[in-house]
Image (cartoon, rainbow, N blue to C red; front, side, top):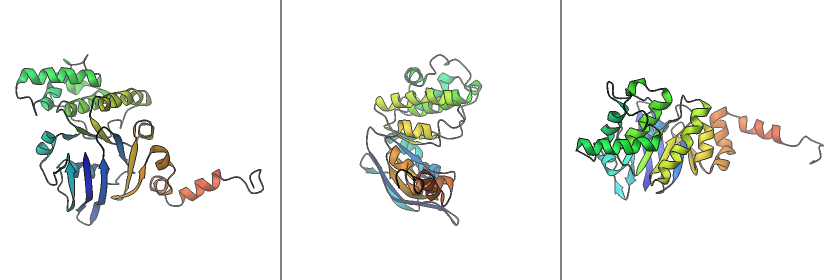
Length: 253
């Protein structure tokens, strides 16, 4: 569904994304992880047209979309959410969701119907008449997903939709994301909440200082020395291995 080949982007002397290649299969639920400043959100911006790459290519559904505008990419079926959630001021939850629906539905009545349908998927159907600005952080995160989902995406890029949520709210979001994938929407998510990554993601790519350093399933990624050091610092993988090794002269010696 999505093929990224040698994608690179620099800002001045900083190489934010450096020769990144990956492939997302249709129907999958996969993730992009890495420490703060690794380049994850910049990569999302490159994929969805908010930045133009310095090098490399992006193919979506078999077509080259490198450098296309965000609205053209969204119309093709790839849509992203944003870390900083900003509801449209002075509008209800229903009206906020309907904005996304207007991408494909010019008639107001059709867009509102689509918004009501999406609200049920994300658990906002009881808050449709509420001022969107009055939602809690958890509610705003759901609204951000709903606005993207209203565009009828084929591939949904979720950028830290669980950031700022408490453990109970995170547990409530996990089944919502699964339901979206099960409805036929492929999902690529950026997430720092490792509980979510390990629970949801079938495969992860790990980005550090703009470069991919590992890829694989949750168990494989969590034990990769390069990943451990990217998150915890140089030498930590060896120290953790030493702590878990049997003591000299012990029963396994």
